[in-house]
Length: 507
Figure 1 (cartoon, rainbow, N blue to C red):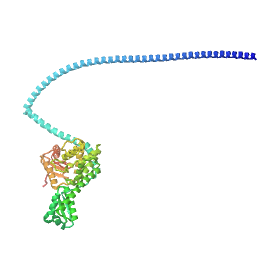
Figure 2 (figure 1 turned 135 degrees about the vertical axis):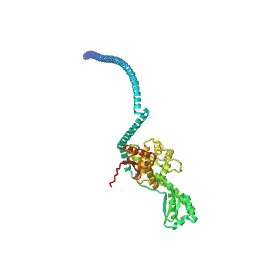
Figure 3 (figure 1 turned 180 degrees about the horizontal axis):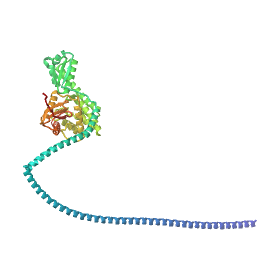
Figure 4 (figure 1 turned 180 degrees about the vertical axis):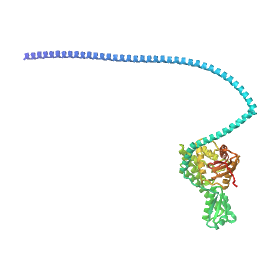
């Protein structure tokens, strides 16, 4: 038993020793393998480092070569530039030498020319003396004759040149301008408005005239004092005439009479009360008309006082044309023309609406209405281009923007179109007479005829006194004088007629 135990212990000890030896051998083998792997890894790392070093070295050498190539190219360019500069310097020196030679030659030629000039002057002096001796005219007389002949030639040449320029301008500029104006006019609907200085108030019976006059004329005097209107009660049946140049006063008088006649109570106290009430109504209506007009036209941001002036235009007229209708028409024309020309139509419409506000001030200063309108616009903070267009539409100040000629042209279109304005017969006849007399003041004119309502002037001249060239010059001079001295709507055509008549009698 003990022996078995000893044998077991011995066997166990031997096994343990063998296991220890085995594990030790395994550990040594693994240590060798790890060392081998470490050596292999070390070799691989060394190889990689060498490869990277070689690659970096090659890249560095390539960069060095590139830099060397650039340096060599720069050196070559510098050498070429140096050669070019040397060549240019040589060319410049050669040109300087050539210029010096040319200058010397020119100086010699100038001295020769001066000598020739002196010789020519001497020869000319001798020739002039010979010509004076032969012709019997002095140099001054001959010069005057030559100047007169040259003047005639220059005048005829200038007239033909002017006619050519005018015709060419008409074919180009006028054609385009007419297109713009015609398009503008065609796109605007116009109305004819006639205003008079009297208003006829109709009544139901002539008995009412006595009540309006009142005892000893008290009622009619009170009404005239309150309204500032002259009231004419005559034999005209069922009608009373209200006369005043101020349409606002006439309207106040008409409405006041209407209320008094409808109510039946007519006495001085009642008249004053009704007139004051109607005056307030008219003021409110003026403001309402101004607001409605600006809204209809799309003109915004006007000062309230300017809006009131616009409304007040309804009760004003210019040559028989209602001023508000004229302002609306001009505003629409301005907007359309500005759009055709590529300008701002809103500004043009604003300037067109306000261009005649100088005709409706509360006071009556001694200023042209265009200048007064410009000052009112400046007072109420309108922009400078709008103010300039208002002030310059009758050329009383200088035009500074393109709005000014547009307003001027559209104002003329609205005022000069047929049916727009009423012209008194006396003024019409005087204008025609002035046209004819102006043309008759020229020498050689035999008869003149103003036709087509003064839009054409025909001038008959004597064929023995004026030739064809002088006829052209006469037409031009008359047109210029009419343009400078007369006021007329639209344009006036001047036609000069020159004819030769041969008359014989058979007996």
